[in-house]
Length: 258
Image (cartoon, rainbow, N blue to C red):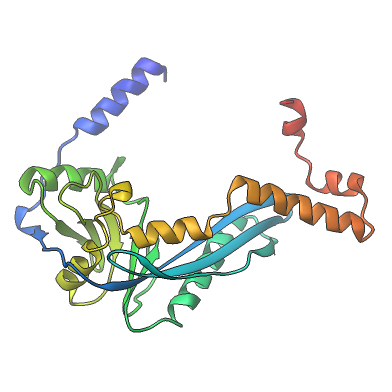
């Protein structure tokens, strides 16, 4: 497929139309005040020896009202060796389990978590930055948002995709609708409460507390390079040679690509 064919394919995707039931789109109001917990985790692969991989992970949370962060809590970075072909998936599962473990210790306010929920958790709402839901080859949230904005312009609304899974637009002027997992019966009230946290101009339509939690725990490129250096440096101090370590982790692609 060349560039012209690729552009034509994208045009067909964006021009696809699908009719939804208008009555399935529910408008909701926004609360003005509230308090909320927001939990997120971050991970990065430090080394890949193919028979095993080395990851760094960190989780944390913020507690906030609609105006400001009231509390920040960040865990230490953990180093984890995973011996499996599907190491990335296992690492994701472990990070999610660590986030759930934090959530189970919190109480008294609604809890937001980044990503989808694998099972029902009372008082916890999962909000995904990206969604793999699709209709054929078309991202489903793209189609829902397009239809929802046509019938409910400049409004907050939600659409139930499946039991406990929703597409939600948290601010009238948000460019995005998000996949939201919530299994409670008080959907309107919960979404209205979350919407009170979605007014920040830097991430309008997305809970600013989750955005702050993401910044808090993120393991950036500089962090990853420091962790790699520290691991190698301490390994050498304990008697390993650099040649052994390079033979263990070196990717010849890096050599060929300069």
